[in-house]
Image (cartoon, rainbow, N blue to C red; front, side, top):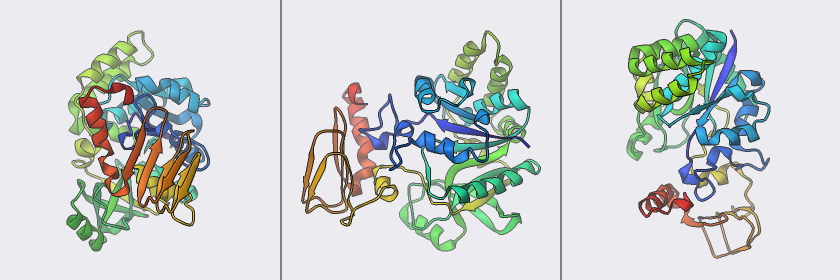
Length: 356
């Protein structure tokens, strides 16, 4: 069966402020030593499995030109722009009706645009296995990541211990982000995987499930699908998306559906959720520092410093994050990296939109 991919690239990446901004969020930034942006790496990673003409990117209307600039080989009609963000269910549905218009039915691989994978070949092998499971019957397939710590920033998926289809396990339930004690219990049980936000299914299967569990969104998607290629396409897209309720695919479909399977992935996955990830994905020096730009360090350890031109002199720092941009400077203890979103909230409340 034809394999297609849908890359979700509409997020804000607020925990990567001040580099990630509304006009150029995280997925369009380069955070790795090879200089490629996260979106470019996501496309490169999937190319051995999916032709470039069968890769679709759903993004914010304001990011169309960024996608075109970073992916010049992608057909322009494969850049799908949401009039307004309504979470992942309408986003995935929009991609599904466009792919259905082209192929009627196909395998659809859904990927976030802002994750990193260290071992691409292992990732592709896992995806290939997942596609085989998705092609059978009406299976919904997701990839889970074996937890190596009691992480509280991810959702978890509980699976049944017996393998059902090849490498796949049947999913018992999806659970929200836990507190630390609950996460420790999940880790000890060896029955839970991290929810990676990657999904594999047939177009017909996901549309059928959207019809069953989110009928209002499905009806709007059908009207959008019927309008594709007509003079009223933009008008219908605008009106239907404005009417959609914001709904995640996890809550709207995956927590309710049947025939859900999960494959465990061990391919060096990282969701790159905050500046803390930089020390995991970039080379550090002998003192544990990750330094980019015009930087001098003295008695500084385990610190991430991202310069942007001016000289940064760091003296006596430990476990810190320093990020310079053209108009803003972030200085943050690593233990408080999750609080960077509070800076965004403060800027919004003060109407300092020039820094967002």
